[in-house]
Length: 319
Length: 261
Image (cartoon, rainbow over all chains, first blue to last red; front, side, top):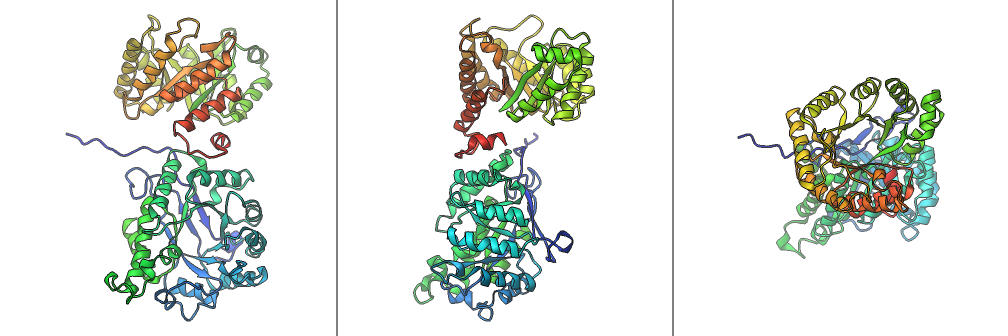
């Protein structure tokens, strides 16, 4: 007896978007990254084209991160106060596909760095590495709206992925990314309805849908990962059924969230039964990443070199 | 929801005049307006007054295709008019419509396959339109059976159970809801479920309200296509809202904008 096929037929798919621009396209990147393009549920390639492989963006901070445990900082000890060298290390030694510059230091409560200082940092990173750049504000709307447009102008033509915009504050960064030719990250706080709404608001400003990446605040393993998972899963199904306002690729902030958990941070003496921290932490980050890949993630922001290597291997084996 | 915009029809005076004088202006305007209103297909019907229906059909289709990219539904009872229309089609197309006599289904399904067209099938035959659920379902079954026989993609079949005007037989609208529910279970994927909406309330004092109410109720039972007045904004908004309520689209404050994109 012939076994009937249970594969679903989908009419839509995830948008394909390219980040970074080489010299002939007006930028200076040596490498560009294309994500999205999937026409199936993740890893069910018998239903349709699985699209481009997910990629890993390694986090670089504009100021040395205050809350990182030693397990993490020891891999970057020589570069923590030099974002350009930090980025170079991530690309050359740890195999980062992209660099995500997190502008923690511009936050009014965390250093309040100026736009001028930050522009210098961005330029130094662009000069130090050839991969595309994600530039992530401090998520303080007022300060982001002051600093991000200047960075956008300074990186004009590089086709960076800039973020984040949300339902209440999207006009400034959307307009500036539109003018300077960058891609945009739309944020929703674990809420699929708001995710769609932000995409509509941005598209109403004539921002092209195929230059948007969606971000549902990520939850780490044990800390709400299932909420992120189920929303991303619904987003993918909506994309596959042809919802144009839900067809954007997805980015997850894995590193920052995984390394906030007590399971990855706790000292060996404090929790001897949990095993050595140097293994436990990267495992926590890698499992969070691999779990979220199943729900449909296109860019993973990550931190620990060992976790990055593990997840890269997993992606290569599964795609 | 597949909205099949009904306005480019020779029964309307402006279209009739346009055909007669070969003046494309009114047709172009209707094509643009209906596309902007969210039409999935533009129905094209030359009406009964055209001197040369074949020529009129080809001319209308060319004018529309030169104006918008919206897929066309070629609407004619005459096989040669349909065929002539198909010969000038550039994009996706729906053939509207065939009856469910086996020989008719064979003929229309072969033609549709030749042009990779979707096909509207009415649950009636040369003897007329059945009045009950059972006979209509028998026709629906026959249509699906024929589609399988012809290896016809069922997601390109639209079944129309032929909705009567509200004042003809008031039991009929509720029969439709039964039929939509049953057609949904007939195959996987099931064929689409269509009605001619304007005919339902044409000439009635509350015609727009009746059409809107039937459409939203129908959607809750699985109606997913209608030949309708897409220029009636309240009707379109109601259809989108009903689909959001049935979880066909992700809700968002501006869902009306999102669904029109």
